Image 1 (tube, rainbow, N blue to C red):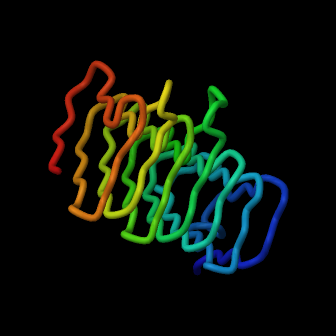
Image 2: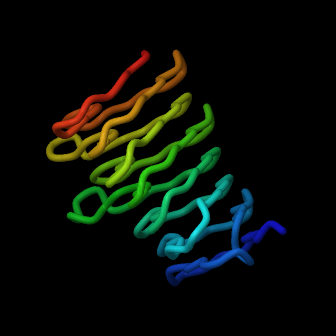
Length: 163
């Protein structure tokens, strides 16, 4: 069963366990302090069509985030990722989606896959659009833009990029 979020929340929303997976954030939703998906045995499935602010979206275990809305984290905070996948996974940013932060998307520990048709924006003086710390692949469609001080950073690993 899908866990649906369709209201405004000013504090951090934490989802955990099978009752919250998958999670859908509707176009009517505003998460003012972000969404944190706690670590558990299965991969997370998060779909966003709303607005997620504050700390953006963080997945403590592997997972998939699909974005058709707005995800905006603090662009100057050291932990200001629009999306942080702490154990690998994938992000699909659709044509009407925007993801921004000091680092737009960061994928750690395991490989990541990013498909972008919208906008992914990192801080223009110190941030990355996309940071893949364990390699992976990026597909940037003709309608997509990836910007930051460094647009794509594979951080001592290899990444395949199709633009």
